[in-house]
Length: 336
Image (tube, rainbow, N blue to C red; front, side):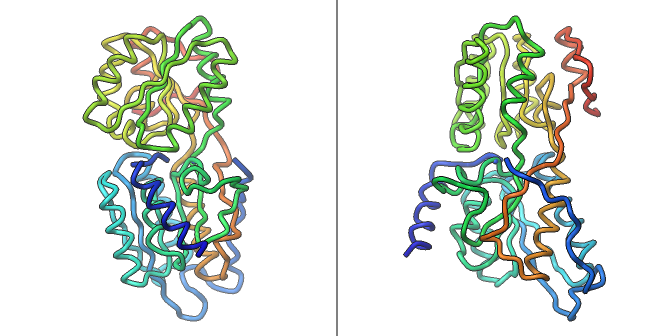
């Protein structure tokens, strides 16, 4: 009954969301391969792993690559990986996940929140690992989330400390009065981020307004309004924003409105600065977790969600030059 209720709850959540990407300790230890040579399972067993990626953009692509590299290094020819991209369509996520279940894959990697929700709705038995998910409690509708799900899902989070992101905005723009928070309303983890960041910013004395767009169709109009009414914008880790970062950037440049972004890919397209993680690294960590499940029998129900081990302050030289901004000390330039 509990699993049925979970599946129903996830279906309801998915109906509302085309989701974004989700704190805790990061275990950076190497998986235990002492009993097996790297590239084999030790007993000749082979594995099939399906990847459902929510949408194609720089951050998610890097996470998928990291995952594949880790599993290939650890299992070699013993693993067959089937990467599938849903092209930003929640129905495609569901179809891909259901196909993997029908095929009887040994593990599903879900890259992005909507992908994770689709996989979790599709099966309560096949192990699922998420990545590029900001907050698993929000994504999966788990009340009182404590770092483990209690069922067949674990994974890695792309959450950079939101209090530090708010402090970054204050460091760059201490004299600003109004902050617009631009995000996709159908991505629950984006809502979580802007709600949290807004609280920090308001405690610093900023007047904050949320500007939500439902999808790419109304993004331009909403972004234009947000830029016109705000001294500075904050854009969280948001898949729709990431897929349209250059559009947002062009609007912001026309309005001369700077943007603090939640991750490097978005910042490269439209922001002046970000506190970013390596999506490749969290993808790689997810691959190591997959090895532990497939070869060593780890239970995803009790595996803690893992978080990026480090966060790097970066700036966009092109956008800063266009807006006449000089980055503070300690910022690394984003490669063009």
